[in-house]
Length: 83
View 1 (cartoon, rainbow, N blue to C red):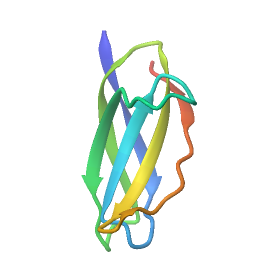
View 2: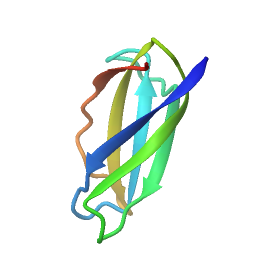
View 3: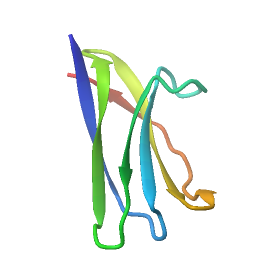
């Protein structure tokens, strides 16, 4: 059965948009699924749900913070197993 993973993270100063991305491995360059949320200057944390992930599978998730000039955060992929 497909499921989803809800990811949460702290705000990055200057970010106007965040994208959480799921990969099949730590070194994969192909995004399998993603979700995005608009940033603002009020919230200190953000979250979004990545859709259609398979239960009992492990994905590698990263969150990229962006401003109008482009990506402003360093990507760190964390392994997540969908329950």
